[in-house]
Image 1 (cartoon, rainbow, N blue to C red):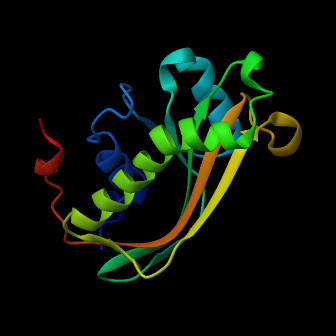
Image 2: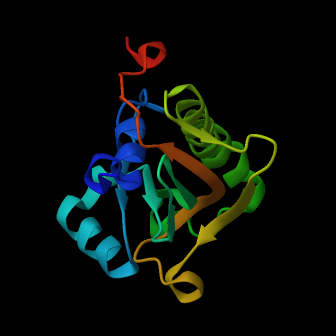
Amino acid sequence: MNLTSNIPENTLGYIIKQMPNVNGRKVSYHFGSYDELVRYLGVYKESNYPLVWLLPSQDTVSVDKIEKSCELIVCIDFDKEDEDVLNTTRFDFTFAQTLYPIADYILEGINITQGISYNSESFVLDKFPNYQETESRTPHLWDALKITLDVQFLNNKCLKPIRKWQS
């Protein structure tokens, strides 16, 4: 087995970077610890939202596949003056127009990419409106989703562009 040919973090990035724009914005992707998130946000400043962030997790490696419990944070930042917006408004706008469509694209992308699959019968979806540093250590003000799903990455895969998303 060659571990360098099947890095789950890169495979997910390959899928997410092909996503169509959502609500007029290109979706960014990165992965790693909280410290890496802070560095990433410092480097890319305002051009990094909406963002899909893969949290660190353990890989279970076998001869023909890697299994990974993926925790993906899908977030969008907002300005301090929007901090008092009620959740009903947040769900009608940021969640319905940006975060849920990105989550749908992630699931669809994993589903239609050869050599990658997830248990589509169930996954965990957490919603975090008005997600702030005091509660969660986020460096910005966010509305966010956390998607937790078990993904299998086959070792013999050949990644191809997602034609359905090409314009």
